[in-house]
Length: 74
Image (cartoon, rainbow, N blue to C red; front, side, top):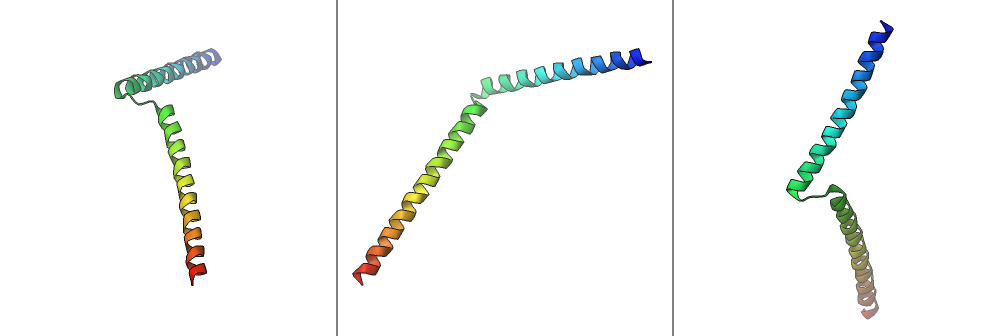
């Protein structure tokens, strides 16, 4: 009985590893067809997010300067 459980456990582990390999192969195949690299896209999203945040800071500083100039002119 213990041997049978060990054999079934070993088969389950082997099957799990095979399914993981198949999933990775399928993802690589999909990326090659679609021309999309998920790691590259994630890096681009991070870069665009940082650019957006920097632009927001520039606009905030410009608005602050404009409001200061308007209040000084009064």
